[in-house]
Amino acid sequence: GDDINLSSWTKDDSMNLPSFGEIMNSVVRSKNLPKYNEFHLRAQAASLRFMVQSLFSEDSFYGDELGGDELRTFLTVILETLSSYQGRSLSREETDLVDECSICLSACTSSSSEGRSLVRNFHDD
Image (cartoon, rainbow, N blue to C red; front, side, top):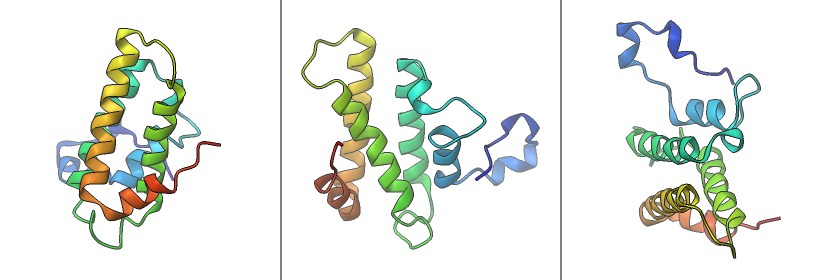
């Protein structure tokens, strides 16, 4: 997928916002932009918040259009982030990031049986 280019947007484009999948591709899978795991901790936390808000604003959240791939990718990002801080002391920014992960994880699993299933089957390799 193509990265989102907000600099070329016009006022008319505000009614045609990028989908959750497009945001995931730009933030997590981009070949041209820094990826989530390269972001500063505060930017990672903000990205997670933005992505969960985008996910739940998707008209197709409960439909077939979204599918499981984007949700699976999002949950994997959350769970891998959480697992990277397991068993160690955390700085204030790391604690904030873990808190944001917990909020997003809770949102995804409390509202989606698919989300709960993906978490149940997650393997941190």
